[in-house]
Image 1 (cartoon, rainbow, N blue to C red):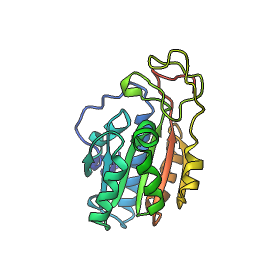
Image 2: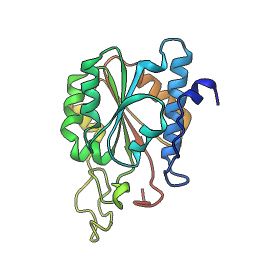
Image 3: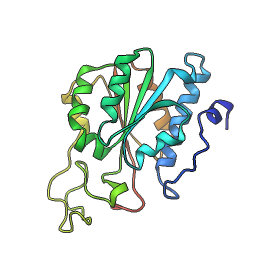
Image 4: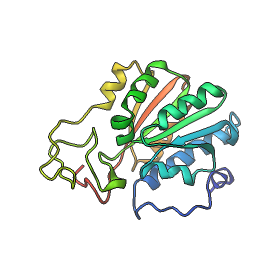
Length: 211
């Protein structure tokens, strides 16, 4: 591990399930930030992060960066507030598909419209995995869970189409298991002048294992 990547780590115990794809997302983020810092264009203190509630948002505990961890579905609007307060910061918002496309969907749409300089990273595993796998807006039709034993009734939302309709200026989708590609996409997203939206498709090892 490079000294920069080491500085980005914390001493907090990582409590994701063994083999969880969030480990891969964390590695991609560290690679991205280390590359940007080592390029000399940024310092570690130039970055701030936000998160809310969920397996995805535990990444807040594992990155040695300033930021705010708040209420479910409010990670994006919290990041928006930080940008308004200090436009010099490179702000990254981590949020899950439930927080982004269910509770926080209005924040998602309007933040893309306003196009402030920030990056939204959505961990999309098509379920509320921290709370026993209830379906989210991106869960596939027919998905069965404790909350929907007869199967999800509705067709899933398409976040990419929604982002296009919201006039987003940077849209990307990648797979958590491709660490190198994800890191490359994230670096471009952070350097983009405007609001960047990156959806990282990941699979959950415990719930909704069909996707």
